[in-house]
Length: 238
Image 1 (cartoon, rainbow, N blue to C red):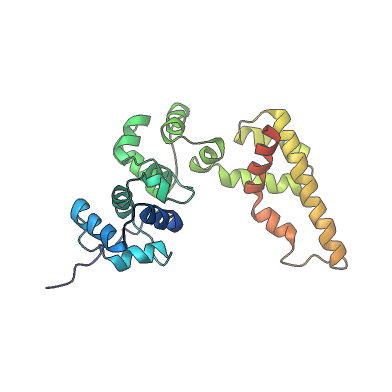
Image 2 (cartoon, helix red, strand yellow; image 1 turned 90 degrees about the vertical axis):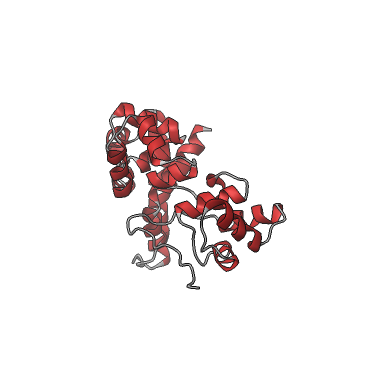
């Protein structure tokens, strides 16, 4: 008998981020072995190629399940797909984490299914303001997730890098147009980011005898500027 092969993933359908540790903990909590998980996925979800070795590979981070496999694994482990997924970043990952089918989201936001699928596959949201609000509610997106999913994160990163490397005051209005935050909160956030970055640059120049090294903390700060931004926003919002 020929071995059953795992179907090849579509090139434009990468695997969702997988939380291997959560999968292992959930399986252990149920008192199940990899053999039982594999059997459940084969018998109940029609995935005949699932083996205990594949389940172990997922749990060790050697491989990751596809969207279909993730849904089946969640069913066997009696949890939601969101409990097995890492932090979602893309529109598709947020949908999967909520256990929704493409047609559910398309119907919920008022789009034709094919139009929504193109947006998801291209990772480019093109909905109207009304549809964007519906999307945020349907996928339970916070503001940071909403900015990322709707394709504004790259623009935000560019503005933030300019703000911390020059005069931050000149970027309050452009950032506000990208991220709808209270002006006072945004000013406090940009001012703090500017101080942090400039402080790191001064320290780097002092340590390096006046020459910034290519791997200095300032460059790392700029690379992670969006994460720093949201962390600072949350701190000032408390």
